[in-house]
Image (cartoon, rainbow, N blue to C red; front, side, top):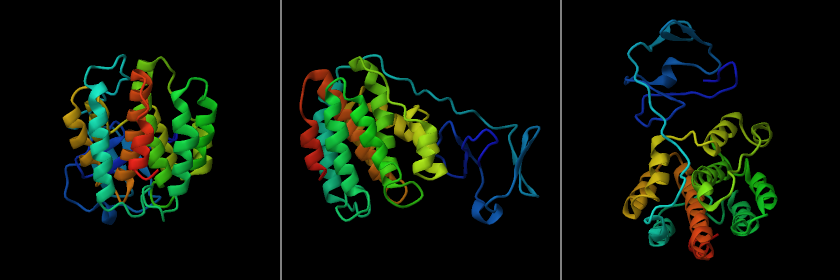
Length: 265
């Protein structure tokens, strides 16, 4: 749903929760009940879809968004290098066709340039403008409901902005209007939400686990991979690169090149 002030709300009968998702307790096929462009109206504690569908809101529970940028890195964060290399190996042996890891995919070369021109230089302060330029080049790159470039950048920014204060830097926030000019409205909004840390519980669990338990990090990444057609893989790639970059800066390492090569980037 698109609200009057331009916000995006997902309505689904799946269980994955987020601050922008309305999870329905129903087995009905929503594609058969609702048609594109049908109006949505709020009337008291009811949500009216089209002419005769009603979603009852009075008994709904509220999902509490706990996303908050980390203020410091825990002792577990220094150990995540092994987990990042392990998940990079997993990505090298599973089916990643049409994702950013597929050399024949539309977005692959753009992501390769993004890593070399934007991610790697970001280890040094004063390279923010260069990163921004590289990031905007991959917005809209690829095909699908959410293009691979958007998913990868979203995974990177959600993770980077969650930990960037721990290395004494400011978060990256790309202009939302500019994003809409470069990709679809839905994908632009999702990317904007991700960079502002409005995240679903699955992605939030992945980000949190890096600072708490390195074993849980691998499990969280593997849980994310099946999402969508290639979205889970693409988001995971962005998150892996961001975690490795934060670790490099925080502990004076240079492991992101190793991770990028393992990913074929």
